[in-house]
Length: 161
Length: 147
Image (cartoon, rainbow over all chains, first blue to last red):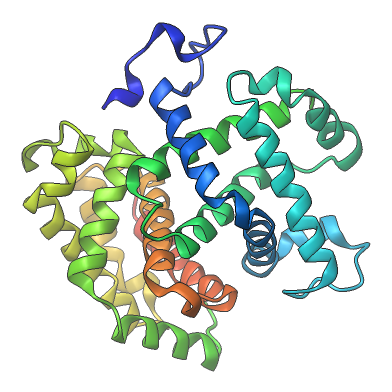
């Protein structure tokens, strides 16, 4: 499985202690993102809505919203905000730790989202990707996206402690 | 014992009555082996797993995926007694197959994604919540006899 073959160009810094993205993984993520990004806001809203319904404990982070129901203005708006972050991460895929530094500070010091929830949101993002793009979300795209979102989560957790 | 509402029972019954086991079972196990390659450790005797293409074309994997999916039928038929229903299978996975129970969650996540791809707009947040609850109860039962 070439996801485990080390290549010189794979990352700007050696990272022996995490599953780095191969050149192929990055190309796959970028290509899939290019295809789905016109519907990014829609994907984000759907993923957020699913997270709130399927994992009700995540609602505690949105206790300041009046309306948490699917299709509510808050959910739609925030889904789009989240996807802007994902788009940013795709653009900075070669160095997520540095690239997402400010977002990490936001999540660590202001939002203080328990990092376990990053995995929950990632799962729901991929459920929506599979649901809305069944022909494109192949196993190969799935593994690249799963790795990418895990590394985004790691980069977002950098500043926590 | 887990409580199920009438709506949840109906969602699960409906989902399984329309399920294409041959298609979904094969896809789920195949995808699990590709997305989480360490799970290949349990399939040493199943033939060529060298790359994603080989895994996708492997008839032994496809057949086994269908078998695993049919394993969920037991829970479907005994929703009020899932823990006891899976006691025997839990012992099998622990004592004979030596499967890390963490892997049950991995397969469960992949199966959710395969079903999401298959059901389109029918895979509403409510259906997803019910299906994931169902799988979580099965996963918990399968891990119960590990010691």
